[in-house]
Length: 309
Image 1 (cartoon, helix red, strand yellow):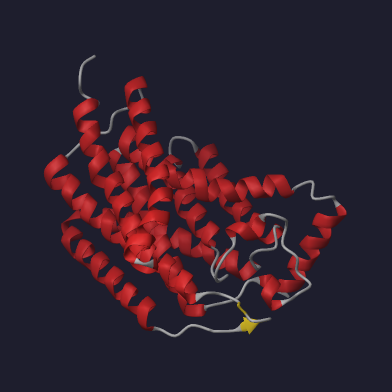
Image 2: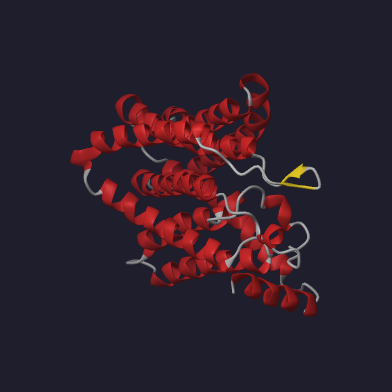
């Protein structure tokens, strides 16, 4: 049934001359290239606590996604059924295993946490965020890169991550327990990714999904979670910054930080594996950039945001 639904969407896509494909591509790209940077911007510029909530939601969701993907090891729709032809260009952002959808598990915690934060002051914005979660999920089906199960489960797990983050932050008296638990779970996840077995199916002499690449992704999400926790500890104990506020100086400083974070992550994802190997390099790349976001740039903001012109 899930594959028949994708074939129906594929027929619609072809019958309409791909008129909606650019929109669906944009929705997918928005979820993983721009929206994932919003929590850091909020953390630095608008509200430290709200940004922390958004970042925690995203990190929990990312780690759950890696655990699920590398456990289920489900192949992409076009591998399961040769009749399915993904939209041109969509495959580039759809590597590795299929279940659950990584795009929806990035969109759901970001849009979902924004919806929670805006529910009292701007209900219309909360509804808009909910629509964007649904639209992101639909876009992955429309483009032919995920089944309905992939996106439904991904959306649900992303929303569960938002709820989990809200409960964790609601109990500061248990903070040390949560911090230790997060590090322990991340280390256990790395051990699991390294020791479990993966499918080794070949078609025409080509491995369908390279487990090395999948383990590398899992190491990255674990590294980001550990850096998030350690960065939070360092910031709270030694930096203790205050968000800059939505003003010209704060906006400029935050955007500079976003640029450094984004380009730094892209550079380190290429450079660090050359130095430390595939999985270790990805761990280091994600660790360094997340620690930068949580502790290093807040220290910079504390110095420059309060400096008088």
